[in-house]
Amino acid sequence: MTAEARETLAPTVTARLQAELGPAVSTDEAERSASRTDRSGWVAEGVPLAIVHATTVADVQATLRIATEFGVPVVPRGAGTGLAGGATGGEGSIVLNLAGMNRILEIRPEDELAVVEAGVINQDLNDALAGHGLWFAPDPASKAISSVGGNIATNAGGLLCAKYGVTREAVLGLKVVLADGRILETGRRTVKGVTGYDLTALLTGSEGTLGVIVEATVRTRPVTAGTVATIGAVFPDVATAAAASAAITAARIRPAVMEILDPLALAAIAAYLGPEGSAGLPLTGGAFLLVQTDGPAANAEADAALRVVEAAGGEARLSTDTESGDRLLAIRRAFHPALAARGDVLIEDVSVPRSRMAEMFDAIAGISARTGVPIPTVAHAGDGNLHPNFIIPADPRRAGAPVIPDAIWSAADDLFRAALALGGTLTGEHGVGVLKRRWLAEELGETSYTLQRQLKAVFDPGNILNPGVMFIS
Ligand SMILES: Cc1cc2nc3c(=O)[nH]c(=O)nc-3n(C[C@H](O)[C@H](O)[C@H](O)COP(=O)(O)OP(=O)(O)OC[C@H]3O[C@@H](n4cnc5c(N)ncnc54)[C@H](O)[C@@H]3O)c2cc1C
Image 1 (cartoon, rainbow, N blue to C red):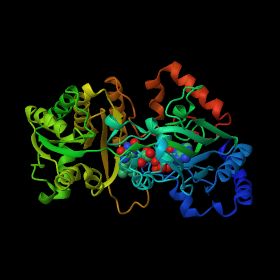
Image 2 (image 1 turned 90 degrees about the horizontal axis):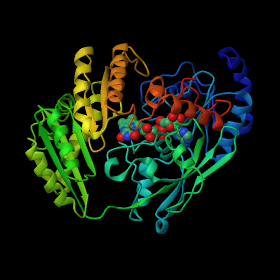
Image 3 (image 1 turned 120 degrees about the vertical axis):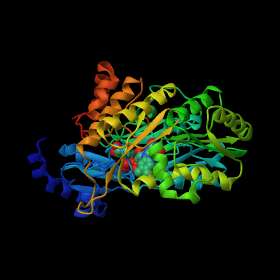
Image 4 (image 1 turned 90 degrees about the vertical axis):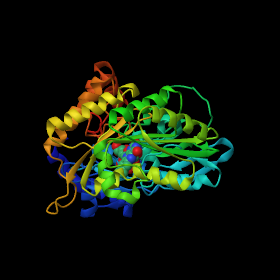
């Protein structure tokens, strides 16, 4: 449909939405404008025609039926914390906001599962599970603000993946509304089950392009028994920190958390936290490695990891009490706030085989030197997932979302190329969204790319679900 035809249709579509969904439909200008962006810095072209605040499955079905009838794009949106531009409403689209579908429908301790609506916030689910001695393992750093539906749609990762897996491993089944309004139920409530194709896995990470997740049956885990031990270590450079983390993995130690901060990141954190936040470590030079072990063998694993860290040249602190452990963890947690204090932040996301992480850090330093763009980087070292960050200096003359300079996009392009060349992937956990779609075919290869487009057409023949996300329309 042309932009003109869409504009002509807009009042009719809005009227139909309002007739069927009443006050769930918002045409408020500020709200429509705010939903043009997420936390990636991407701003969609044009303005959506309406926001539907769904509170029931029927609301979602009605929205999709109307969208299908008129051929209007629908952008599913959870909490809008995505970093790939996937939940951004463009010209003439309907933004389908799931945040109001936030009920925890069931917690079954005996089956170690929970059933939740898509808009439930990850941390709220964990708070509800805690009383049962259970937790939901997907642990994005945004868990206090992102929705379970969004976590599933992006197959979110986080700090604990090397030991506890990514979101896909925690999803047993889904209730999904298809583009034409039909309901698809996938998966099961059993621990095992292999009947038919695994549509749950296909929909996990599908970024709103195949259907709208309205409910999820998720696997929960018993809260890890035992203690937690934490090591913070400073290395002369990021290569030695990466070598130490690789040696820990090679020693068959499985920390719950293993994070590396490169020298630029550490310097920003040191300035942000001041001397009292340093936990007694010399944060002003070098790179930082954080290792946290948990479970009954936590102390023995931490002792073994400490030996590896020191042998690799790290100046380390080991903590087995919560208070000093938290002080070490706080250094890593200060990464985002320390950068955000300097301007708007574009958070990138690439993954490489763990054995090639040091080469990726080298490549980042090379790109930074070549482009003149500083790229402070944090890595989930246990799984080879790096987040190179770009800071866009705050500009008081600019209202709303940041405009990302071309030099930064160009440095980001170089990053993707470098990750692919190392046998890595464009995105370890944030998704393709709109930001990485032009790279998708290159990573997937022709056969997989074509098959994936065909799958999209099977689920969504009218291409109304998040068109332009993942694939260039
Ligand atoms: C400070 C910060 C830290 C972060 N840390 C991490 C991290 O450690 N690991 C990580 O993986 N991510 C991280 N993220 C990114 C983001 O929080 C995750 O991608 C999260 O899973 C998005 O959830 P959301 O509810 O905000 O989804 P949204 O941003 O609303 O949507 C994300 C995508 O999912 C689709 N979608 C959302 N809900 C549904 C649904 N119900 N049905 C179908 N499609 C849907 C959207 O269309 C979009 O394509 C971070 C973000 C921030 C701001």
